[in-house]
Image 1 (cartoon, rainbow, N blue to C red):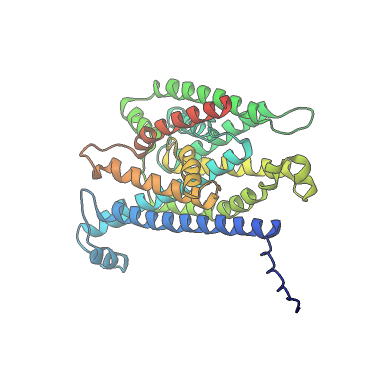
Image 2 (image 1 turned 120 degrees about the vertical axis):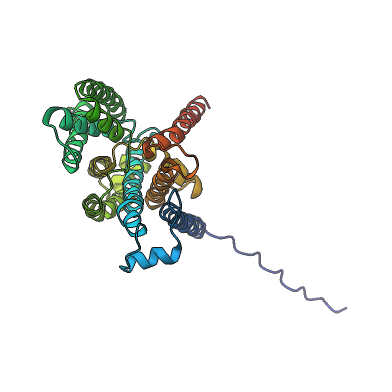
Length: 359
């Protein structure tokens, strides 16, 4: 009787290790983020094209490129170079700054309502602008500098009220409460100063405090662009440096991170970005608040500051196009449009936060 030789059983496929699983998750997240950033960049280009080419005065694509090349087309050249294009570019820059600012505030304070809109930074800028007009009779670009000073002063008051004396660190809950208090104080000061202005000056100040791109000039664009050229790369680096802090102070310190310094730097950059944007355009309501949740939804859970910046830019450019009469014949400041859209978003965030607390 001959024995039968049994063939060896096939080896079971090796299960992927933990490291391979982590790498796979990271690849998926990176792919989703890049796809969202690419779509947002295309959306921004489309919004810019709509803002410049369409509206009450339409411009053809060949005429637009001819104007950029230096050709003088009666009527069209002035409207494109002095009105439509400056407003579109300034809106994109201001939205970029506010989107970055909102992402930094939310990552540091870990609260969906943490944004310069709610915390009084933009209201401080509005109070500074109205104070410059009412007390010193300033006009034009000079008002932007007093608005910048007002935003920085509001930030200083908030930081002073929220610092823990023993450790010197900033307490998130105190920062939020102090910001709400400073916002109320700045609004009251703005109302009191508006009452002192003449009718014409009060109308100009009210238009600015509503968040308008009417005063867009290439000088403002140059100043704001130079600020963003320095601040945005720093904001991206600091936003990335804050990732270990989400693991807790002990683990972050073990990884060589310095959470306290990164948080302070992130708050400083967030204040600066919101201040320069508001100084250039006036307070654009809820842009910083909306940018982060929209970007997070597009990237499916991962917060990308680049995506937040692009969302902010798209929101402001589209709001200015709508406010300029693209949809209806009524002309509205861009800040009024963003406020009308952002208020339901804020209520939705409040409801979602409450449900999360009750769960």
